Length: 145
Image (cartoon, rainbow, N blue to C red):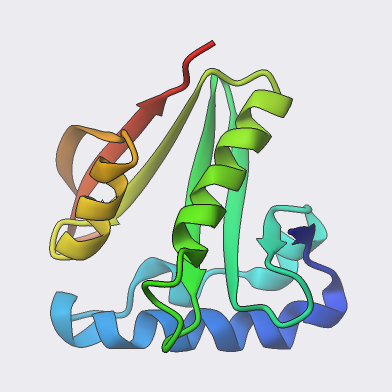
C-alpha cells in the first residue's frame, strides 16, 4: 500500500469509474465516489492504493475519534481475491496508527453484497437515512485496544 501521487490521478479515476459502474443500474444513479474530486483527495494524501498496478484503493479521512472510509474500490475481475478485505484491514492499521478507536463508512442500502462484507468484518449498522436523495446505511467498527 502507498499514498497515491498526482501522477496516479488518471489511473485512480479510471479504477473508480470501472469499480462503481456496475452499481449504477442497481441503485439507479451514479454512486457518490464516481463524482469525487480525486485531484484534491490525492493532494490531501487521502487516497491509498495497492502498489503500482492500482488493483484497489481506499480513501481515508481522519475525523474526531474515528477514521472515515470514504471509498473502497477494487478493479472489476479481481473481486473475491481478498483485495477489499486487505484494504479494510489497512484502514484498521491506519486508524490504530493515528490513535483513532473506530472506523465508519456509508454505503447505499441497495449494495447488499458490500453491507454483508462489512458485517462479516465486524462493522455494525448504526443508522439508515436519506442523504442527497439516496438511502444509505451508516456502519461503524469499534477497534479493540
